[in-house]
Length: 315
Image 1: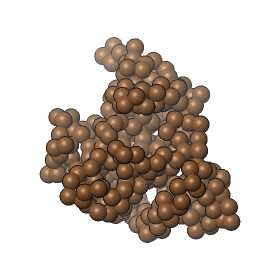
Image 2: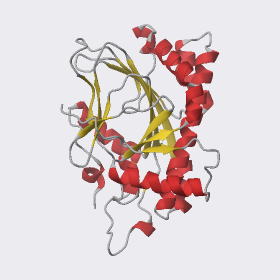
Image 3: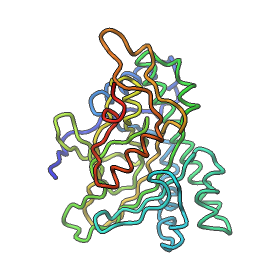
Image 4: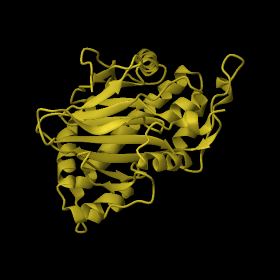
């Protein structure tokens, strides 16, 4: 479980008011985003607005996971990795997932009204505000990525084909605070982009190209932005999703929100023709993300987390 703490992810500032397409700040950040994703597959995004929600967000997370187990188990889904997942003997991790999280009514329908039939306006308002911030940032980052590869004309198409999924995660206290405990096994994210936000308890680690694990210590007013396999495939292999894991230590609970931008089911993820030429042959066949996720989930249930899009739909 060796890891390196001397290397730090690139930090890119998204808090500037002047950060608009075509502006000098935008063009600079766009270059930084591409360089960071090419080198690490992820970066830290400073976003001051989220600090205004920080206390409320993690208060809501604590309130959510403090509910009785039978209540939490009411959160169900027929999608892979959906609904509520309890901690196991191996992983002290609980999680809940809500689909189409950017639609305000779905927070009430998928979480609030299930757990608090009498209503919980504060909880709903907090989570909705967070998802709006995270979705706006994701759209900004994706627009920069597309511009940097000269395929920004597909921005609206991809936005319309995106399903935002929110996963609330709690990593429990390790049985022995002095020994590192794996909270999430090494894996890559399967969608387009992931936006991560955590409390003060660190634990996220990213594997670099040379196989070293680096410890990520984001500031309270920043997100970690991570490329997913689907984005790498759509770009015909020009970016790669980084392997990452969670290793906790100490006697504090770690809370994290993972906000995933995934292709909708039924939308065929297809490499743009602009990204295929004599020097860059087609690497991936068109695929349906939800079909791929189902394929992956079956193998993950057997303990195989190595399956990726290259194995699923390579040419």
